[in-house]
Length: 115
Ligand code: 5GP
Ligand code: ZN
Image (tube, rainbow, N blue to C red; front, side, top):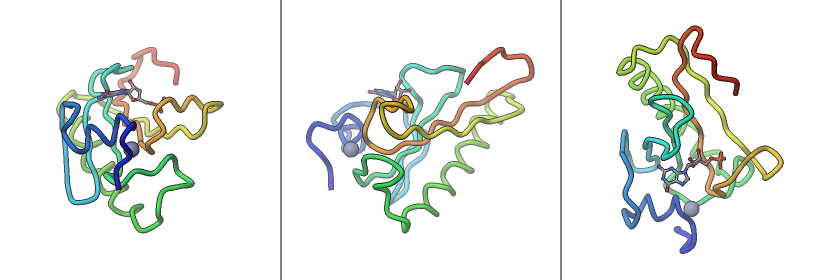
């Protein structure tokens, strides 16, 4: 089910465009609009869930498989040697978009990022 005022639900339906990296029946991955590093990607369930606690366990395997697939692909494409996987839950933790998502952030030695 999609929520009318959710920006990521609108990306799932195509109402808002994205730079799509991967899609299957349950999951969508696309580039972050404000990347903290080149190749910064987001992996989201197509189903609207507010955060980790709202995410059905049954979606966990598909979400994890997509993180591995997309994470490896962006690392290879950009010659990255590491990957941060970050998932924010709640305003205090820095969550801004309340549709559960996982950040994939390619890393390189000495890139100076402080996450
Ligand atoms: P949060 O802080 O909620 O964990 O992260 C939300 C992320 O979504 C941010 O990194 C932000 O740049 C990204 N974002 C917000 N709106 C859009 C959008 O319309 N398109 C894309 N591709 N990313 C977005
Ligand atoms: Zn949503």
